[in-house]
Amino acid sequence: MLKKHRRLSAAAAAAVTLVLGLTACGTDSTAEAGSEETTAAAEGTVTVQSLALEDEATEVVDVEVSVPPQNVVITDNRLFQTASDWGIELVAAPRALMPSTNPMKENEEIIDLGSHNEPDLESIVAAEPGLIISGGRFAQYADDFAELAPEADSVNLNVREDEPLDEGLVRQIEAMGLMFDKEEESAALVEDFDAAVERVKAAYDPEDTVMSVLTSGGEISYVAPSTGRTLGPIYDWAGLTPALEQQAEDTSHGDDISVEAIAQSNPDWILVMDRDAAISTATEDPAYKPANELLANSAALQNVTAVQEENILYMPQDTYTNESIQTYTTYLNQMADAFEQNG
Image (tube, rainbow, N blue to C red; front, side, top):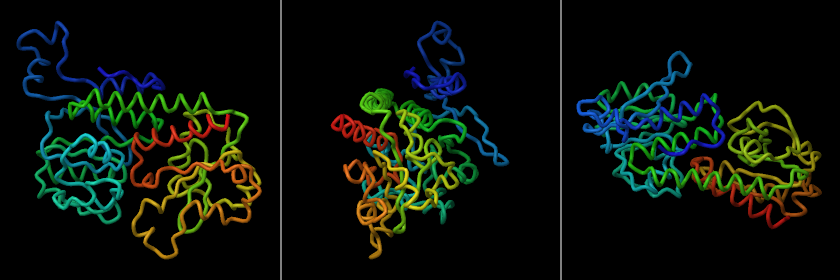
């Protein structure tokens, strides 16, 4: 069994134990001829935890998955980079949601399931999937896929609303490691992530205040600590001191708080996600302005400490359509580099 994430609560730890419940292990009981576990191992199955959506409530269920998986479909954007890095061949995926940094995006052999706003759910039938991994922006269609392809193993690995994001990312990647016989690789990803968090915590000075923002459509929006989109959870992971603490109203696209209010908080550091940078239709728009230009050209921000000292840390450009554990590890290490240099 892979190691549990260091921040797991008792309930989450039990959940991960279920996720990693390999149906064959080297105990005396499973070694007995004719045992249920031995039979499962001979058939080649692992047990992972899946989410089933019913009446807007999330129920956790155990699902047996045949291994090695055949004719794989993945719809969770947090797992596309892992699929590419591990050489997992997909028969269908929402390629419209993949970042241009992922080579699978232009692979015409992968049936495109569209976007979450304009999905082509029925196309999954032609793919004849053996395993469907749902989640992310397509989590709402997990049950639809199960109905369209009832013979396939269906697993919804979406990060739950009631679990910390870091625990969800670890849970996902460990389940992927089990299903695709990549347990060493998944363990390495978790270790890299944990190490990056520890680097940030060690290098960060709690007396420095931090502001996080999202840019889109030429606007700068506030991202709240803890609850704000993408950047919010990093405050909890690394113990960052917020320059401004205001409850989030829109966790998806940032909150409409004036740039003057952001400037008045005078942060020592500014964390930035450029939402449009990950969307080709946005970057091709002549009116598109990258995040660095928006911040540089904002008169209200020119006297802010973070701007004057160039303490502005931009997330990878594909973050909005990637959001993988690898993305966070990359950004956390970037933050650690900057904090160490500043210290």
